[in-house]
Length: 305
Image (tube, rainbow, N blue to C red; front, side):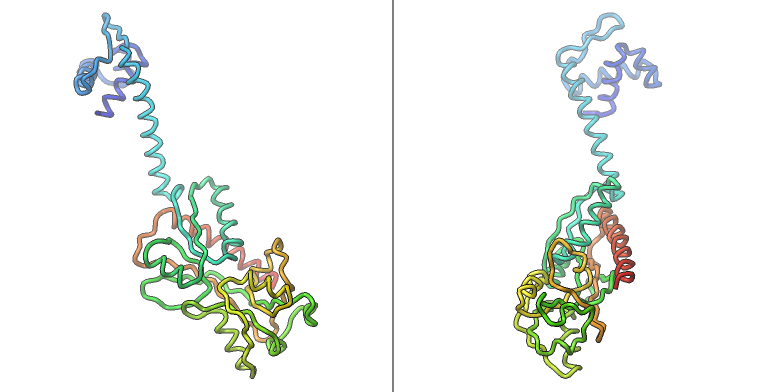
């Protein structure tokens, strides 16, 4: 079906005569009459009953008018959606991250997307670094947010944030009321540590720092997520470490979090994308807003810690 002829047909219906429709379309009557005759022949349908200069819609013509207007409206919506998709105002982004990133960074990004009327649907997959990087390589994710550091030729890494590492102590621990402690104060404690599944992670730095100070930590638990470890710390089962971001999770009733006065250990947050995939406009839009959020987090970390 010729869309231009459909548009002519709708204008004729709405103006009642060929002459009035021709004026509205800024064209002469003969080519408009020929276009409508051709449209009827193309469809094999009689759309008008002609009485003098007046045109009266047949029942078939009435149905064509109703459905034709719906079709043109749908086409306009499609064109608008495609333009919005190209501009990053609409689309889908799949992100891989840890639970804490999903609790701190992602909600703020979603809020800003909503405020700016950007209709991006976010699909979040929580997991460790090895899982996220594998998903990126197989183009099943657009963006990864991880704490590990590594060098891989097929992945592009952007450093987002460096946070102080805090120590979580049981509420009844003798040092729990202190503002800060030294790492060697923990030499007789049981440690909860996070697996390093890929590259260099927080646990590697902690173990190295302990050994420099003359002791090997007694690690009784290796896990992939920090929140379960903090829950066990609160029950008095040992000590754990977490980035400053956890201090903002007031709703989780966490155990006391103390600064490490010596050494100053840090957790790095990195944004990872695949070098072998073309970034969608929606992904670029998401990245831009994520960097805004991280910049504000960086300012907050510098101010409060």
